[in-house]
Image 1: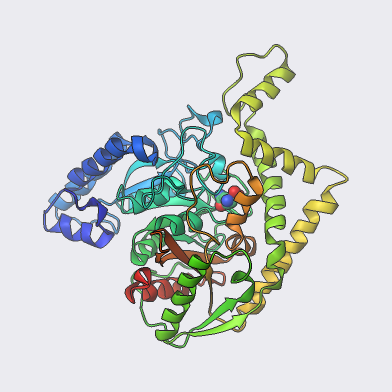
Image 2: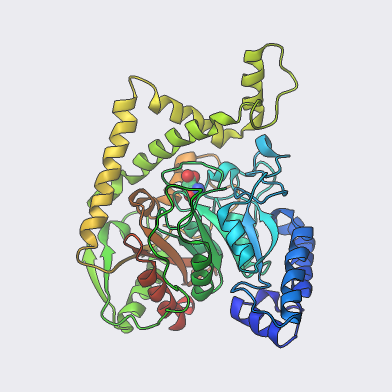
Length: 482
Ligand code: GLN
């Protein structure tokens, strides 16, 4: 069965019904590919064979009994290793949690399994989701399926590469400042950051709680719509999960986008944008115009303060969230500890890699008395201004279209020595994160070197339907070939 690379949720459903394969055979194939190819790609941190086969057998039994099967029945799905899967390792790609076994399922995990999905493994990522290249994994990096000497993006690099590289048709990732959209664009997958609160964060290991989201990756917009519809909605276990009703995203998908006004923010098309990426994105905008959309130039004037604001807020929240990994309540305890003080100090020093350490120190600093007003509070004020920029823009436009990243996938090791260069990867994605709105990356062709480029579509809070329709129309019109 070499079809795994091409399969979508619909084609799996059809194949299962026609008995061309069973859910067990499909799960076995996904596990085989995961096992055989991981040495080269680094996509998975662990596989979950028992869980996968048990889930697949349930689907096969339902089919044999002529029962109704769930919307994701039999579909192999990979889960980023910052999302809890009961009884399975959940390491956050950190030495701190190298042997940690999750005691419960994330709500998103429970919902995909209830819909019949078959979780085949936990994907590699940057440590605690901090990074833009997957090189901050404590274990090994991920290679980009389109160019193995290049990064897949981050932090959800494994989940993006799993989908783009043919390991599983769909996966779950997390996005705090771009960690779904940027790797989706680097690998040539569809990736969605839903509106903040659209998907429960219960069971997502916290990095920056006011910015963290769980979201889908897939090969087609329709599959992301299906996966989003499955995981979205209120959850008594997460008070920030919104009660807004969940539309039938996949069922109501239409390629009819005529008349939609598309904002083109001038701040996203200037200095720093590589011309090969800019050219693809401009061609994408023209394709949308040919579908009847009306592009209009807009301004989001506070964009230039976004990186500074984001890296103050996310580090402040991270320093607080990661305080729990102290070798006592969570994370591995250092063996070389004479006094209690040494035990805390050594446990934390041994647990975290350099990027996580840098963020904890920076975040602790900006929250400390004397610096709080100068840094943390200012950053929050800037965040409010960025949100206001978007609110004003959405008074006149239905969606905003931009590049996802200023450059395509870069070479492994190219930016590791310069954190600021790495942070620039997020320049077009963190604004939407700070505003709490919805965003997606949809494939938009390749650079002359053959590297995937993503088009970012942003819509206002809970306007995922418009975003998905635009992405779907773009994909149907061949936007990825452009
Ligand atoms: N690359 C960004 C960072 O390093 C975003 C990470 C994320 O979205 N989890 O913080």
